[in-house]
Length: 380
Image (cartoon, rainbow, N blue to C red):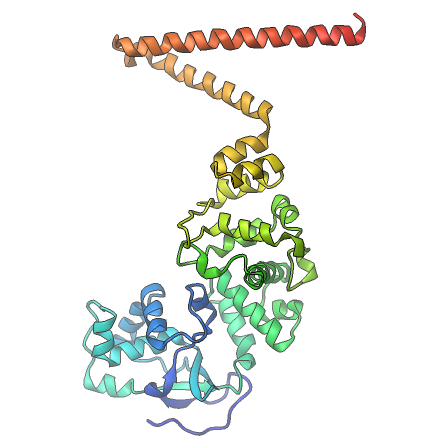
């Protein structure tokens, strides 16, 4: 069925028209795709590959092959640069394109996709869609569905969409939050984190495609910006400010460092310091509160060493002493069944005993010195 020429609508909800599948283009500006490093000018084949590999399009294709395309869930499309772009329904469109093309199936190395009947293939030559004049006109529907609705996007895609709506339509973040059924503060947090990344890119200190992993761990940043250590290190504006430049202008070097520590850098194979938010993100937050600890990190000694420096010598000493005691308790509890007369283990135990004696001697000497100082200070 050929594409009809119904009047463009400003909101989803009008009667759908039918579009030839070959005339429909996948959306390189889809917020979920940006998370995988897709640029707005990306080739259609690359977009299709990411959709198939990362977004479970095979499940959609299997369902459509078996049951046909559900006509009551039309695509949402708009005209951009002379092309009909699908702004909602990219997974469905990708599934249909693959079902219709043996060449695409071979290129994507699609396994075990069922052969569709001639009647089904004819049915899938065109799809229902609702046309909007601009992608901005569909933002309330898409926002509710994907930001806080039945088909939720990940945090990074949500932030992309919130920023797009705010910057392209002028809608206030509070209004966006109300329209999509989300909390205002959540919207502010996502917006601020994305603005931090964009500020780093404008300053030339980091780019998203520098991240060592193909999928950016955006939640590391949204969580980090809530911590006082990160906020002070970056001179960070309050989220309520809703600034497009939330990091202090004199902290661009520090911003680049934070990005590398969070996500690594593929340019020199630098691994990220944060492998999991708990405990690594909190450890890095404490490191950023200490100049000496930050200097340790910058010298390449790693997060664990910098974290020890941030705690101070007294805390590290106390923890080490307690850990040694705990280890000895375990050894004592196992000696009757775990020790079989090995000479080397006996020598290790003797060394531990000598080290413990030396440690006690040093501690007693320091304790006596401190007591003498206190007596002189008080005149006793």
